[in-house]
Image (cartoon, rainbow, N blue to C red; front, side, top):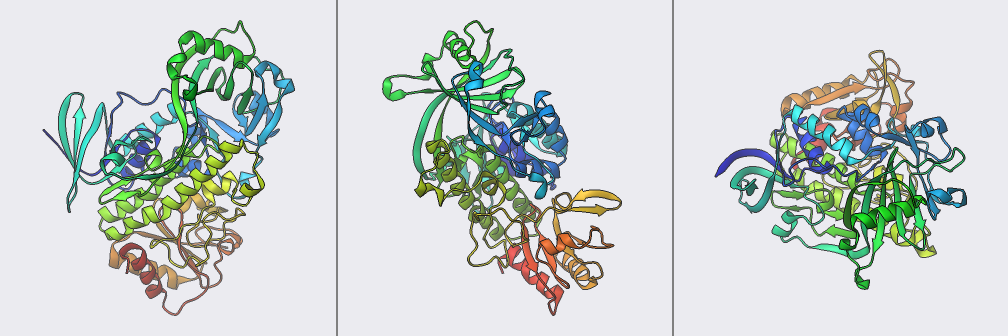
Amino acid sequence: MSDGSTDVLIVGGGPVGLSTALFLARKGIRPILVERRPRLSTIPRATGLHARTVEIFRTVGLEPAVQQAGMKIVGPGAELDLVRAGRATPLVMLGAQSLADLHKSFVMEAHDVDYDKFTPSWPIWCGQDHYEPLLHDAAVEAGAEIRFQNELIGLTQDEDGVTATVNDNGTTRTIRARYVVAADGVKSPVRDLLQIGNRSNGVAGNFVSIIFRAKVDLPESAPRFTLIYLMNQLAQGLLLFIEPGRWMFGVNYYPERGQSPADFTPERCVELARIAAGDPELEVDVESAQPWDARHMVADAYQSGRVFLAGDACHAHPPAGGFGVNAGIQDAHNLAWKLADVLHGHADESLLDSYEAERRPVGAATADQAWMLFRTRGQLADEDKAAYRDFVIVTMGYRYTSNAIVGAPADTELLPRELTFTGQPGSRAPHGWVDQDGARVSTIDVLTEGWTLATAPGDDAWLAAAEAVSAETGLPIKALTAGPGGDLADDGSWLASCGVGPGGALLVRPDGIVAFRSAGPVDDKAQTLTAALATILRGA
């Protein structure tokens, strides 16, 4: 039975699939998303949302709701009143035997990042069971169609599109799509159907995550934390603070010793929760026990014809660094605007090649960083230190090189050693506070969801060039002036921080990445802008 057609079919209704649906719908594309589960996740996985992910949520209006649903992630010792009130959590990992022995704990890892220097958005600690509904509702409101209990069981491609076969709660249906985005997890059936191989370092450990509720009273003097590595003779693993009264204990099990998830009976889970708390009489309500493994994997390709992989379907990481869902949402953010520009006729399909060219190196580097951190528990050997990059660099300091970037230096380093935002093509445009129509806003708020050209006040030639190119190509380009008396009013420091001097301009893509920069004046600004966009959108 045929069940219609769509421009984009999304397979998988987790955070990455829902984000893809939202980003596409906001760009005028009406995707269909199919998810084999009957409902959204009720499990608080993927709790750490990094600053770049929160920035992206900010651009689609979700940051306030996610902040309300979660807690601000702060540095150790910072904003202690918020921490004690349950509205913030410090980015600290302790080593301890149990919660009762925190006075004997030691700091294994702590991060104190001054995010205000480079972003308007701080990381948020929020389980996907809280932010998935926000993504779902926003996507539906924007025009996406989301179908639960719909499992993809077949897929064929031709020159014009993809035919997907779906089991709709027992009824077989077909959906015709111009493109498919597979966000169907680390065991991706779509990846298998496409016969895409992968590079893998294997499995670093097997775990069962026990999610439980318990009233654990921590002394005022106890150190605050987000994560504890429990080193207990009775049980070892990672104890995660989810929200007040709710915990996740990831306990190791060893298949080579004959152990399996079946060993984690309800009674055993209660016992393990009590061991973690250090209280043999603690009242415990076990919500669930989910097996998983700390796996490293990078798909050999992110695209096969008209089908694209995103999130865990193309890269899997151990939990160290908390990269997983963040990298996946950034995949979606990178891909969605490209699909939209192609579908709206603003770009040739060659633009889509830049998705793999940009995101696969980032995905591979992210997986490698997570693997290294997990295997060493953060205690890097000398040979690892040269390859190590701070987690903030991994999640937002990367620099793309592809046919969708013009003017990136030939020696561009994917993950630089220092976190800097200089307006280099291929990097995220710098953040700065400016005045727009009497309101204080971040440039991140302005340079999103569309093509934007920024130049200094009085440079009418660049503004006229943007208007002419937009009229000729049909590509909407928002042209703004930045500096004293400009549309984005400041003292001129933001444009200077972008490496743009008098007579220059900055072209920013819909995902906030610098596409092209003219540091100074050029002879023919319309021709220069036309050539840059032709390279990006048409591969010319």
